[in-house]
Length: 120
Ligand SMILES: [Zn+2]
Image 1: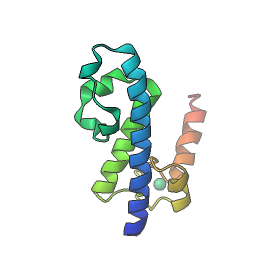
Image 2 (image 1 turned 135 degrees about the vertical axis):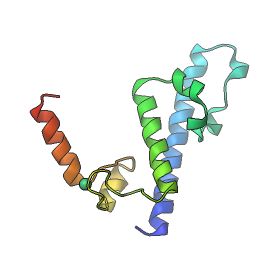
Image 3 (image 1 turned 90 degrees about the vertical axis):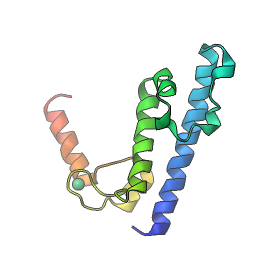
Image 4 (image 1 turned 120 degrees about the vertical axis):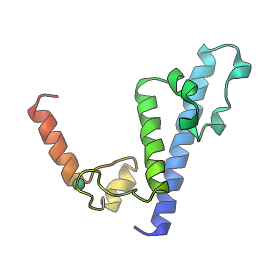
């Protein structure tokens, strides 16, 4: 993967995280008081530094935020696009469709087959 590809995915992931946090921020402001203490959702790109905020969001959105943060971390340390399991490069098309993925299609398929076999 070239530096240009990396920049491309970094932009996608950063935007995804921002959008998610703005969305979550809106939801959180609706249920918490006082509002003055709430962080500005637009400034939430460094989400892992604020655990309290992370506790306020729940379920799927938090999972996704964590996944995006981890993907951005992998971009920082140069392991982005490398399969967690077999350490092969993940296909560009797969990353394009799902930049937060940590497994290549082969390993993902195997994992799913395994989970299905166990009835998960
Ligand atoms: Zn793999």
